Length: 181
Length: 181
Image (tube, rainbow over all chains, first blue to last red; front, side):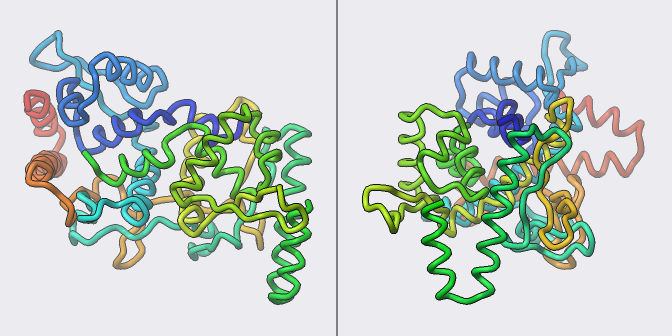
């Protein structure tokens, strides 16, 4: 299924790739600095940087004082990955932190306060949305097969929502029906 | 560097892993359904599901009507990945969509409207924050080496911010100084 998640992962789904992008957000621009900060093998770094430039996430500029040196900087497409990087950091802070706590905080420059936890919001009034207030719908690129798939997802979620509203006993029956589904 | 981003990627950085989590958000619970919807090889799926259960992202429940069948459901830790999955989908919609457009939309159930683009927000007043309004700061788990690293990042960003405020000519000189750094 060629959904945007799968297509994104084709460009940034590799472990080192996201750490290289993190470094770029921290301001790293030079091959040597990426290598030192990440402890990555040079041949792997070369390949990943090449891929990121190929996908238009990083761009190369010649270093002004040394024609042979190259700088790698984020493009607009690359900069748009910032909310994703922060979502990853926040989830890790909460669920995958080291015993001594996270080494990095992402803070508002002016106040020094941690940025707010990333949440989904209504495009209407900006209200934060819970998981159950959100669903999937077919987009313009949906194939007939995908349309049928999303209709099944939608029906299953509507049944669950109805069961939640009807109370815990019905929910149990619904869960059983769900497992049969 | 054991930052929360790297630690998160150790748990969810694998390509198939995030697609399995996406499927779980869509309501898929059975091995056969994951396999059919993702077109993934059974041995790979078995390993990835095992890893996700091991990391506490999915949990196994015995199917109520068939003792041999297993259901895989998201734990609270898994459900907390939803903003990340949506950030990935939105970035893909914008920068990696197929020519015919994205096949999936993530919508508010009540209105059917697309959810708002995920952005960083101030924890104080909820205002959306631009990239330049945010920086990194050491957390409780920062090592002395990391403290020095973040201080360098902070200084470089402060110099850039000062250069931006001083106007384009200074910015050019700043960029040159930066490349030498």
